[in-house]
Image 1 (tube, rainbow, N blue to C red):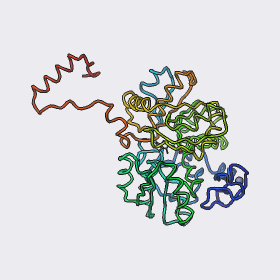
Image 2: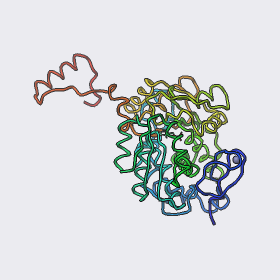
Image 3: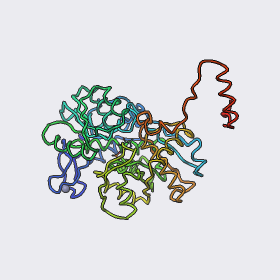
Image 4: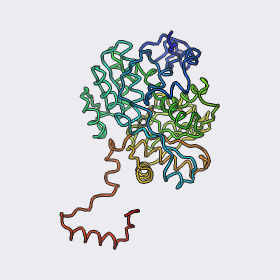
Length: 419
Ligand SMILES: *Cc1c(COP(=O)(O)O)cnc(C)c1O
Ligand SMILES: [Zn+2]
């Protein structure tokens, strides 16, 4: 018996077989995977999950594939750690960070890609492709190569070098499109129409998106099988945010966690905040914008799941805030200095928004809060390169070091702790 029931339209509810398809034939609404929860309930238990390998495939029962042999690089089950310093500084007693910078290609996109490519293989595709703001390109390139697919990645031509090299090294075909992500995405919709490929975020999107649920599952398991009180999630298309909510809901429905009232708050860059704007205006309509921000991985001006993301935030009692590029850089530096995690611009956005929400009194002291850090800072070094400590240049001579040391002491720079 198959655990996947069908694809179901989020708008009109019409069901259709679980093939490579993402829009409803009747109303053009987005399609979502529905499962046979009665069958899954008989199979799944906390003990069974805990006995499995420490990757996101421990949640196989709730992922949209039938095979037991996924296209995997060991992604997921990343650390959830209690804040070492920032919580204290912000006055939060139970602040946690979900560190998804340590995935195989250094972002949370490995979660969606392992699921998308496993399903693509199952559906018989030999070519995979994606439209990417950066991190997805790296993930599709890596999993595509290892999985033996022909791989095309489409990116905006002005992407950060770390992201282009970080995809190129896996040897895909990279197409740099002169334009922003929304232009890339528009082109890819046309390409997807004309070529019979598995486009992970076009015709494979219903399966791809399910991979993000594991960021809800893992946090609940890692907190000792309970949902957090409040989460802060960065949003590009808004898919990740909606799937964290869906994941927690499924865990509750299957009796794996108690009832929950998690507030879901969304973080965006001021230079691209269509979802936050809709929430602040208490509106149903997410108005497209043209992005201008250093947070390129989350710079989607016309977010596919923006409407659903804003609904989830409003329904759960969360908030939306946006932060400037300077605040994003400050967020990256705060997280590095006080928690030891070097995040990319999306992570800086999350930390800066977390801080803002605390200052605005929208996060309470005692709440169990989880901030999702979704990408690694080594990929967006140019964002902070000019704003971090730089080497003091000297020759290899002790007197030059002594002079340097004396000048540092004179400038009253505090001694490092433990020196
Ligand atoms: C893609 C991405 C996101 C958000 O993804 P959506 O599901 O499109 O909202 C967040 N952080 C990073 C680092 C990403 O690459
Ligand atoms: Zn429909």
